[in-house]
Image (cartoon, rainbow, N blue to C red; front, side, top):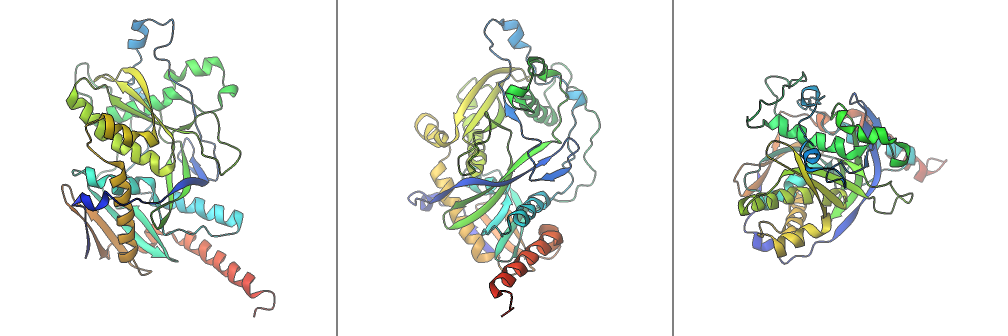
Length: 394
């Protein structure tokens, strides 16, 4: 077993890690039935702020922006299903076959896996288990999902009784409701005023998603990351090399004292890391009351959050340390996760000061790197070899 020590953090302070700006190379959509559509932007959403603090509206109207509305009709995706890296790899395969070349990287994974690694130095209560394997010189990394004894219910949920403490399911719904209130399914110029004003009446669903796939790099490790993006501000630029004005939408309880401020500052760590990794420049937070009423909006520029925490906050985390730490963990994984046909477990227990890597036998390589992706890569490699040999085959 190979072990990476998280502490002491002092060794991650001085280093200045090179960062390659995330650049979108491909994307995919899940439709309203959660059917995958590689290289499709049909589920891309467009930011349009919710009606809160609108001039001319009274306090009574603003107090009635309830994020609980429609909870009993929520169409929740069954997240007990292990989707592995399938959608990410299907889309990469479609992109490579369309463009005729393989996109090389040291590691391919979901943005969520890299977020867990990046925030580990300052989130001592977090834990993760990931599975990894190598294929054609690339590490493929996915979350290890333990088998659940009972499948998640997709049936209608009941609203929380008045005065009762909101359930975890309800608070998750508030986040999706905020997204529904803050986005349009078409560009603003193509949407009627009636559609904009009726967003509160839409049935909320998390089945449809738009996911961006980017190439990026941290230190000497090249990465391909896939992750959901909530919305775009205006439109994606025509030039693929230009930054995309993505918007990340979050909800959080309105802080009322210093303890709440510290709690929010720690939440900002995950907000920042998620957006930083995918190249999302702006985060819009909807602050809510304890019972789920939307109170106000606040915008954060992703790149300025670490400076804000350092200069104005309680200093509960340091973005520079997170980046340097992530670079070293990635270097550690490249050294220890090697050999085709082997599956490795990357594990960090709650309150643990180490990340452990060891081989396992209860997970198949094909569950991580699906055979169809492997076959596609092998076809691409055969074409490249044939091209180099030329028509004579010599």
